[in-house]
Image (cartoon, rainbow, N blue to C red; front, side, top):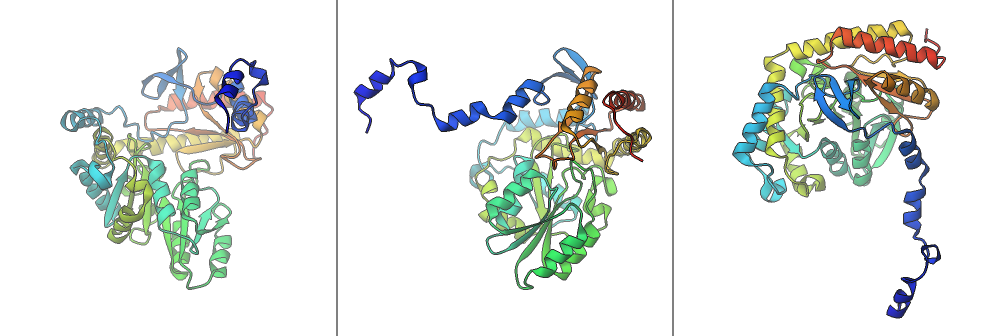
Length: 414
């Protein structure tokens, strides 16, 4: 026990004489943090926004890595719906859905989403991250088997680790490996397969028909995070499951409202039995506050606009096709991504930083992605187009990208 006289004595010692604390030393000496602060590739604060343009440090820049695929966050109907919801409900339910935070606006959105995706039921969460964590942390447990594509989003990995299931990883979209893993497991063991509908870094669309067929043969359920597919793929933007005509054959669908829905929050769509089970057992649901009325209203309004104004999605698809053609002409390796999200794969940290810096200097906002977000040797610059971009803007970016690649000695892919 430390005497008070000892504490009083320590107060007069020079700081160098006081013993350091190991945890504080770890934080202040972290190399990755020091590198981030030195080169400043992340956490740039946007001061203003006008369509696809943003203002950073007083400079007007073209945003070329937004997830706002349909460009709806400033749509007059969504802004009005958001303002009306605040006037009616205030700013927050101030409580968890289980206790005192459930509201009729949550139920309205859940009913519409379940119908839209062809599911029996839905639960809306306060973040998309929680929506993706929840099923994997709760539906698969110790002694169960959980097979996961190595490229799924971090939220799925976090959920899987919390659930405690026996995790089997298979290489990205390697269906032969998935089949082999399934065949190696006992037939009676409870199993689940977790994939992204559209992979955020690679831009690839999951091979759901083959995955679902394997799951049915091996008595496994399928969970799909389609945050980047909804609004982009499928009839009226219903996403990857509808795109592959797999409606009714996937057990759990999760998604985020911070992409095509022009909001924040997320959802889980599934059978009534699974949603009720999650509401009973899932800690991410039980102990999280309900989604605010403004964000719920924004997501509902965006969903309606997807159906009423298909021109936004068509413009997005046209822009994506135009952008892909431009990348092909430059000889860029973009992993043949068929989605609006396009990786510029350079496979080298230094070249990634150089190209990112040159684009930034020319007024183009992109995101540099290093390990562990992608595997070492696959470092890339993530870009994406939206419905807000014009072909002239995309063309200007492609020209700047071509110049930057030449400056760093880039060799075009064949």
